[in-house]
Picture 1 (tube, rainbow, N blue to C red):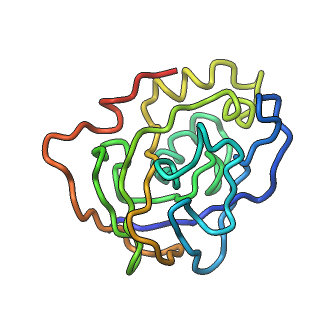
Picture 2 (picture 1 turned 90 degrees about the vertical axis):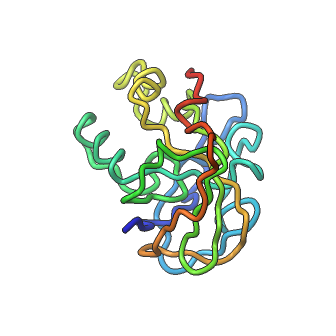
Length: 182
């Protein structure tokens, strides 16, 4: 069974050397049910909606299986939210998701896969700057990106909710097929 491990929202805005000057990548697991609407998880913030938010990138999903891979590679614990994700999931191959694929999460929320995450320098700084030189390339080459999601139907979700793939469009590309890299 595929399930939602955690729903994550911004813990705090952090100063960042990028052009926006702040980042909302510091996401942490939230207790209890969380409302989800067109712009994502209630109480979440997207400091740079041009690159990391808006309707087409309302939510970012990352798998526990991919997080476990990186925890081994980086020799550290990577709790839900560490990748800046809103949804930590398990039992679903998020990197094989088709563009246009729809998932139901819990009883009511429906989301649609729109595109892969493109790792950025803000993410690289979050990982550890000099300690992980070449992070953007390394993350890209591992092809463990996770998808951005559009919200098709609002509702509430919480950790433990089942994820059901409702629709996989025939002939659609996977998120990795359309990924062009850094």
